[in-house]
Structures are given as C-alpha cells and as structure tokens.
Image (cartoon, rainbow, N blue to C red; front, side):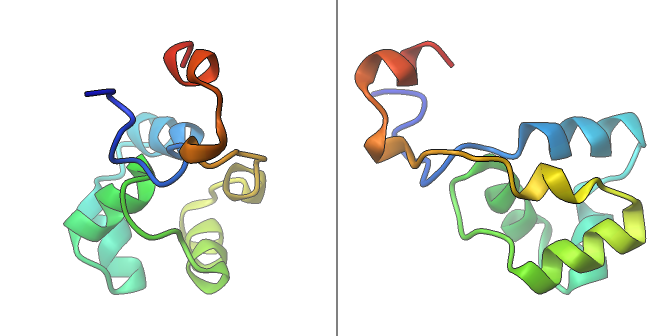
Length: 88
C-alpha cells in the first residue's frame, strides 16, 4: 500500500516544521482551538479534516505561524499522477 493511501490532501509540512522549531507540542495547538491532539495530528498530516479559516486565524495570531503556510496550493492526493505521489 502507498504511504499516501490514507491521505486526503498534502500534509502541512511547513507548519509541522514551524511547530517543531518553536518547540510547540501538538497538544498545545489543540488546546488553543479546542481540538484533541489526535485531530491536530490528522489535520497536520492530511489524513483528517482540514483546518477551518477560523482555526487558521487563531493559530496564526497565537503562535505567529505565517498565514501563507495554510494557503499553499496543494493538490488532493487522488488528483496527483502516480509519479507525483511517489516523488514526494
């Protein structure tokens, strides 16, 4: 099975790196927007729902995450060609 088989969309890699570099745990992110750590993990990894606009705004204001990190163009996994999926 492909490592991307359960993904709905591309992961938020830049946000994950930002949180790691700032030493911000996912549980803290969840507390700020009222979500479980599991829900945050799924949102960040592209395996669950996406962040709402309100959630993104709160996270940008609270943690200083650049808003561009939420709005990068990403193509849903199911719309990528097989060569695009394997090159990631």
